[in-house]
View 1 (cartoon, helix red, strand yellow):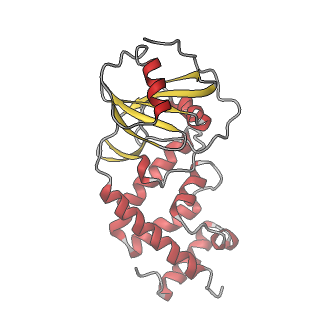
View 2: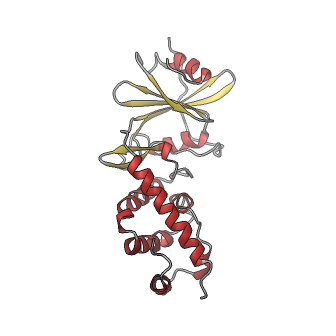
View 3: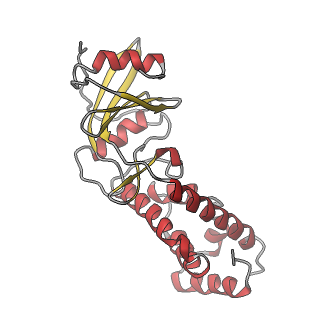
Length: 246
């Protein structure tokens, strides 16, 4: 990766003058792509660092530019709808939509005290999945008319199940995911899985959120490889920036 050439350092200095980007902001740049994207999507940065990175990647590692642009477009769509999420770089949340990379998990931790008006579900009439998730699925599957399902995976907050009509049913305790899902419910999105509906249910004295969303296609390996290369590029660039004599 050709980030050590003096021409590139000169290019960065010229860019600072052209854009008015403060040198301190550049020196304080995060050294990983996930943080840079997430700060932009959350409205905590203005995108100047991303613009600089795009110019440098175009100059040094042009093959990575389509994936970089795709990731930035995910962050832009999240920013557009005010989605407070810090998990863009987690490839386990990725899928393919309309031929490009998209994301299906818009939560990150239990941060929201008020999440809007979510209707409560009334009780309705596998594979290896968390026992509590299976119990709750059994409670609500009549409401969604679920006849067949498959366990897709889970984490610390819940589990996801593939159901009919190319949909996914997520059962989670993550308030932030429910909050963000409400913001984009019913919208036609380009880089985020469409949210069909959001519900809540108290089960065994704990609050759960049930999110019905679009199922994305598999096939993100090439994106994962490119992401790792971009991340390495940014880390090396960050190290170099912090050793520049300005």
